[in-house]
Length: 136
Image (cartoon, rainbow, N blue to C red):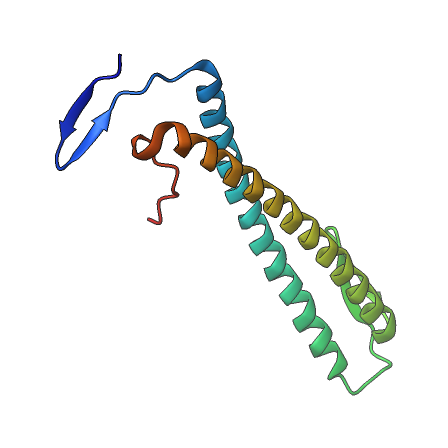
């Protein structure tokens, strides 16, 4: 039998937590954490993408086409012509944009899963469970 206790102005009802409920809560927590990690990774990749765009813009402002431009590959700088460097920057930007797109799709899938879990958990536990992220 579920007991009701008064905690401040709101009544709190004791609800039995089954193994399946605990699994859903754990899944919600894991996916929330993963989504935060993915969002941080997206921000980092977008910053890198902006850096590549800035480098590409700076490269287009060069007047002398005969200059060799150093391009970093791993830990090594390799000199290329302006045209080759521009092509390499474009290829790097396209690859990074694809990575960002893939990460955003994963975040969207996780958000859908979290929405479904929220509905199920709030239906059972009501106000006895807090599934909202802290904004601190």
